[in-house]
Image 1 (cartoon, rainbow over the protein chains, first blue to last red):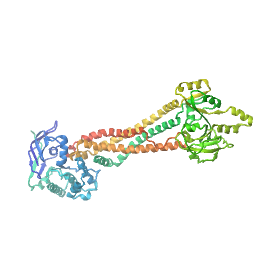
Image 2 (cartoon, chains in turn blue, cyan):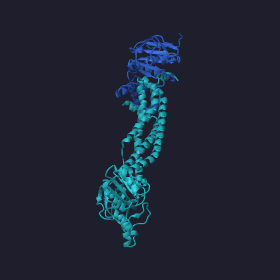
Image 3 (cartoon, one colour):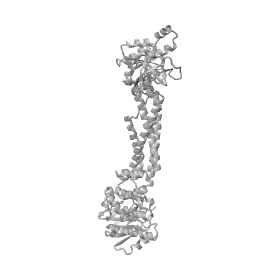
Length: 218
Length: 400
């Protein structure tokens, strides 16, 4: 569940970004559309509790973002937000299994082998557990990164440009995977994209919300 | 616990850089370990050999030479002193004990020292086999001498004239091995001990032409020097002055001369220490560059960790742990290498029949090695860790 009211963020000494209100039910899909540099990243950072809104309210999974403290924010983010970065950022120094273990470490949780195996199995990549990211294909790597995102059973999955540099077929498969995974987890899915194929893919989706972000002069 | 494991993985994800840094750091620490061990061992060897000898009386000359030759059996002696003069000192009220030392011959590089059984008991040395000498021409071998020459009880051998080797062999009167000392770690280990009379006998037999000659020689008997223990510490003030001013001999206090010697050698040790410091500094710089590079290279990875919920201090700790791993490994390697090098030096010195450096030792000062390693690692990791602490998650979100 995500809802915003009069949300705005002003960079110190920079422009102010204003966002339209959204209300996404738990398990729904939200598309953040807009060109590069339009403020999608800022919105994602706000939703992840990395920034505090300068005006307005934002509630993510029942938590008011502006009420979140810095230290509490880290723990909350670990529990609540699953993040799929554009460049995946799997650590080359670690195996696939190690990358997931690293996520548990970062969240301050004890190592749970069972949960890692479960997450890898859910994305059908358990066979690659002992491989290095460099030994994976692009699609396999994205599955691993997604397994890492859902490892801690987040209620919100944030995906940053998941279809960038993918051909049509791969983009379709990637989006399908995202939707299926989010549905399995019962998680709200937020996709930040400037790719028209994404809106096309989710055209029929029930409960789809779309937020067009662009610089607006006050 | 986990942080340590991940830091280990990250460290070895760049094996070449890690190995090079480890090598540099280990080299610096090894040289410091080596310096510490050698100066510790030499001090201890000096202390052991010096034990309880308050003053050395010998022929006039360099006091340091007298100490080096008389106490440590390293240098050649300054000359000889008349036996009569030494005997006179025996009754001096400030003298508790006097040990005469006569030298002049060697056997396969080991000095043959004529003395009294007091010399052996002074160092608390014990016999491994046989007995102490009871008559002239009986010899007791130090542990190292026995080990290197292979002589056993009852074997006979002849000394060679002069302390340098290559002199004529005193073949007419051979020595018989009466006993072998157990290793004591003192100067005795590398000496052949015999009665003072043996030394006279060997040389008088060689030079005297007839009995009259021998008689004259007997009256002119000499010893090389005498080791003296005071009856009272106050003697240190007056006794040397008395010897130096009113006799033809000189008195030298070993403690004083050793302090002088060590202060002269100290300059060399300081230079070595500075070199080791430069090595460590280089290592610190190299570790810094590597960690800095690692932070730059892994910025996005680190940012992702923040996104995954890791607080900044956890990210900084990860980097510090990497440096600590280096410090730990380098300490182990450095200390091992330092010990190895010291053992090598000890072995070489033993071959040269010089000062004995003991086997493995772990002096307290060695604690400074891990402390230094820790300091270097932490200092070089400080800036990179701060950089890691401040990594912004935005780097992850913003397209580049």
